Amino acid sequence: MTEAPDTVLARDGDRPAPLLELREIVTYYGEINILRQVSLQVNHGELVCLLGGNASGKSTTLKTCLGIVRPRTGRVVFDGEDVTGRPTNYRIARGMAIVPENRRLFAPMTVRENLEMGAYLNGGGVKEDFDRVYELFPLLHERRSQLAGTLSGGEQQMVAMGRALMSRPKLLLMDEPSMGLAPILVERNFEIIKQVHEAGVAVFVVEQNANVSLSIADRGYVLQTGRVVLEGAASDLLQNEDLRKAYLGR
Image (cartoon, rainbow, N blue to C red; front, side, top):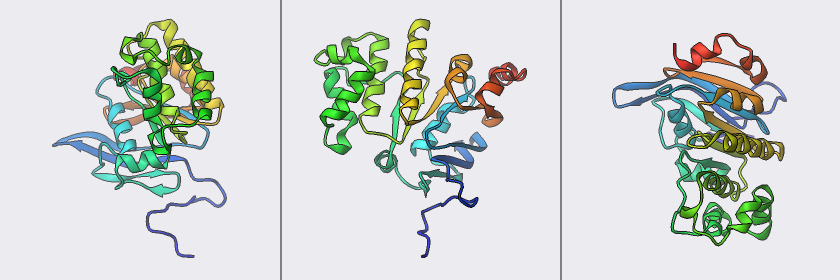
């Protein structure tokens, strides 16, 4: 059988292909080179974190995964398919979901209506979708008729995560989930991320908080000025003496 031109199969025998793979990604904003030969992958059922300071290229990497930013060279492969030239809505339909930085909820809409927006590709969600989200976030069931804009920051983060899960994603992308939250809420959020991962959803977390991210991740990457400077098992990175220097860009 002839392989479809936009399909990329596993390259090493029976080893399954990664769920998400960036291959030597180079991106520019105008004449400014942002990402420089970035390669990384997230396997099925894996929790991977991408660490780095400000201006390291973390957000651009996430936008490249989603198709918001198109690389000048390199490839984005998702679930066995080269999606480099595909738009964001196609990638979401294929199984990506995003919890954006600063939540970006529909403030004048209720909690339930925000959740429904996450499931627009499958008709606004069925009872099982809502039950799954409410099991993870019991407070959202209590607040389901409350306007999202009146919730606290931690509660809004729960809505943003629940909204993403309503699409039944294969891969959950998370952009700075600890931003703007009190330490106790950060710990709670990452416990929930861990629960989502343990339920079988692959997760790719972009974060500045190295300790909390690596404490729940399987593997991690560290970006510095657009290059991957460290990668490996999360437990190894936690013990790496160079992590602080690379993470802070010093």
